[in-house]
Image: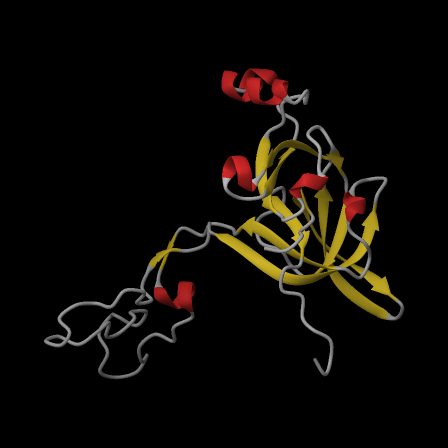
Length: 217
């Protein structure tokens, strides 16, 4: 595990901005402010991480144990708690505030979120299957997956067989998105491309853990 910086925020939506003569599609993320509410160390927890809190919440919606957790570090209760694994957890302090300016323009980041849920979907929509023939010889099964395995051998369906089921509503990580613009005053990050989830969805933006090597590497 390497040194990792990160911040919690929410997806505001997509737009485009002009960089020199090119229109660049960007996702606008309201990044932070976040409070550090706990520091995990290998000695006490078996691993190194920091816990970040984000989002306003009414006190009546905060449970007693959560109120005690926030009061212990002198931070007002916040809605979301997210843990960020990092080797340099010791460099953080409880109560510390993190803002969008922890990232710089041109930096590569990973964005983690929960994709839009699309309900129970068939194989054509969920996996992009072509379906059965639309011409002669096919009964009313045109959107079926076809064969899912042999009969006698192995007499079962293999694990991982692509079939109909829940589509979306899963944790998705998009790697190596470029930070195009940082608005520290308003706490906004503009990253190139799309990120998972609906508008208003919670996202974690972290420094890229698999940044591509330069040419010739």
